[in-house]
Image (cartoon, rainbow, N blue to C red; front, side, top):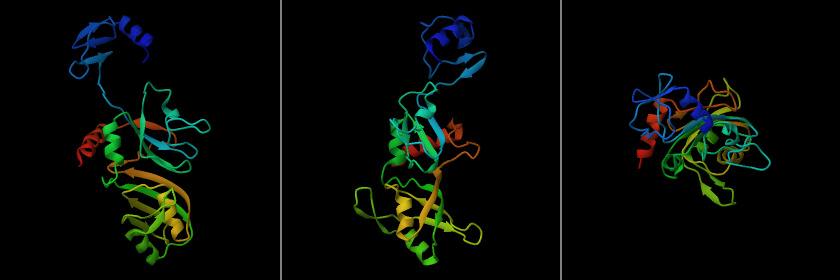
Length: 231
């Protein structure tokens, strides 16, 4: 809501603070403690915003870019500023993205060593034998974005060629550059699509269409505080 819109709402006597109608913009309000309502409906104060987005293909996990639309562009029509990205995805990947202005939460969700598990649905070309799946899960040596060799952490991979050929569910607790794609490439497989469906306790809302978003639910907000407390 803009300042001019807020002025109109106040002038129309639609706002109350602790049961008293307010018409002046200069009225002092303490959002965390005062009970504020518009048209009788309580307005809750949010110090931080937490947004769940279902990222589509072709959108960058960036705050701005001169050539491509970004996940931040998708929420520019909303009165939210200075949002950052907690958990990026490649431009051709889809699924769960978290946007927030809570720096401590971003740090807790992305800090190396926090063991925040991420879950992906992967469609691929090629064949993953039982032996290769065991090697995949136990950790393999691959290159990062700078050409350095590193050992991936143990993870899990689930496939069922008889039910869903060339579809895997991968869970891992790290996120190096193109890591999932590079792990499949190690075994001669090509990733066709990569869809993230979970980051820690935060599961992608199946009702969200590609490119749409919503605020965290009350339950998800409680998980935010739990993640921030993990040492």
